[in-house]
Image (cartoon, rainbow, N blue to C red; front, side, top):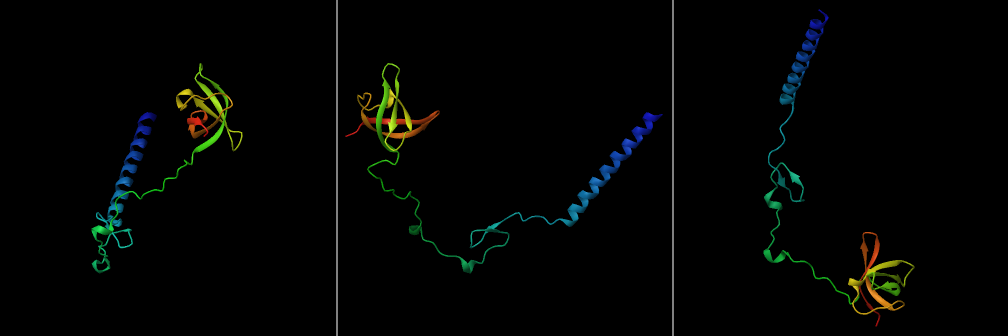
Length: 144
């Protein structure tokens, strides 16, 4: 007997929630305004639901539109190019370390990034980069 009473109560609650949900849906339909389906770009560049005033438009000629990349001024020296000296280099193991002139930062160098024969203690110039474990020296060559 108790089971049927609880089932009836649950069913009543379920039906009540269903009615409330449908009533809310109907109220929302009646009270809510539909958002505009089409938007215009105004004179100031913002979106607006109203068409912009045609008298405020500016005429743009095709010659005024520049689609290319602006030329950049190339300097002779790379901003990543640094100088330093070879602290350790082992050709058999295939790697070494360079200490930069500006500070005590140590750069890892792989023998594939050497541009000529280099030994321990040589003054070098290189491009600094970032590797998975820290700073890396690339395009390493003797200082002229």
